[in-house]
Every structure is written in C-alpha cells, then in structure tokens.
Amino acid sequence: MVKDAAELERRRRWYDGWLREWDVSLLIELGHLEEVTRRAGQGDWFCAHGLAAVQHRNGRHDAAIEVLRPFAETGWWTAIEAVATVLADCGRTGEALALCRSKVVSGDRDAIAYSVKLLADAGRAGEAVDLLLPGVEARVHMRALVTEVAMYGHFLGSAAAVRAMHQDQRILAAANLDGALRVSSHRTRESVCATSLSPSPV
Image (tube, rainbow, N blue to C red; front, side, top):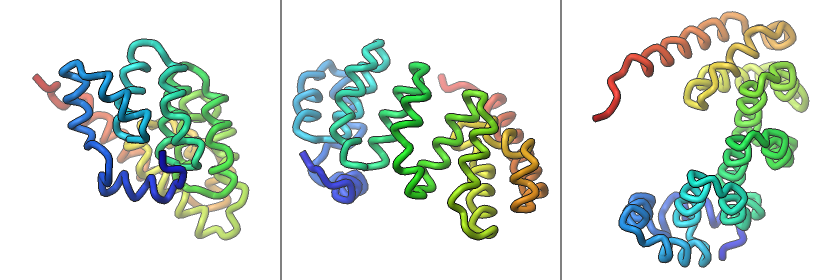
C-alpha cells in the first residue's frame, strides 16, 4: 500500500492503479464484496472507501474505521475526513475532532472548515469560533477564511456554522464581517429552501 499522502492524492485525482468509484459501486451492487475487500487490502482507496461505506451502513462502524485507518495514518486529508465522518456519525465527535487536530494546528484550511462544521453541528458554537481565531496573523487572512466557510457552509452541510459565526461578536469585530456573513446566511437559507423544495428523484 502507498504510504505517501501526496501520492495517494495523485492517484485519487487520476485513478492511477485504482478502480473508479462507479466500478466499485457496481461490484458491490452485484454482490462482489469479496473482490472489493481484496482490492481494498491491496491499497485501492476507492475499494476501501466503498467497503467502509457498506460496513458503516450495516452498523459495523469500527470495522469501517479499520479499513480506512491505514490511509488516514499517512496524513492524507481525504482519508482523515472519511474516518472522522464515520466517527461523527456515531456520535463520537470528540474522537473525530482529535483526529483532525494535527491538520488544524498546521493551518490546513480544509481541516479547519470541517472541524468548524463538526463543532457547530454539535452545538459548540463558541469553540467553532475559537478555532477560527488563533494562528491567523493578518486580518485579511481571517476575513478570507471565515468568509469562505460561511459562504460555502451549505456545501459543507452546516447552516449552523454560518449562524454560529454570525452570532459571535468577536469575529464580527475582529474581521468586520457583519455584512459578509449576512449575505452568506441569506444565501445559505436560499440554498436550504431550494433543496427542500426540489422534487425527489424517482
């Protein structure tokens, strides 16, 4: 199995040596889970992810995590996020946040945005805001980071993250984001309404 995060990301982008997601889904749908399991054990990320999804769906959460863990241990964010999502879905938010912590400390914006979502969804709005403040040396950097998380909060699945930031006066004062967050909150509400009104697929 590949142990280098950069190489894993390259393979994910180019499907180099791995089955594509739809091929994995088809194998699972046709009952070829043993083949998917075999390939996952050989380091095929999409097979590992598909296998973990099946196990997670069937309530075998720890088994799902173990399939994904070797990829996450390389420091590859895609895998870390996948493991954290399984943990969070099981109500183990603390473990999910701990898993992301090293990336957050290093300033990884994806990890920060994801952790803010986890905290906001758990009702820990103050901690979500606290996560955005340290380590940001310039006001313009904080503005860019917070605006990005707020603007795309609905893509992250967390309108709560937008509300948390909008309600915390420390961020509004520090980065003068009141107007930006009002726009972001409005766009998020529009997105949620559009999603709820869109017809369900037949």
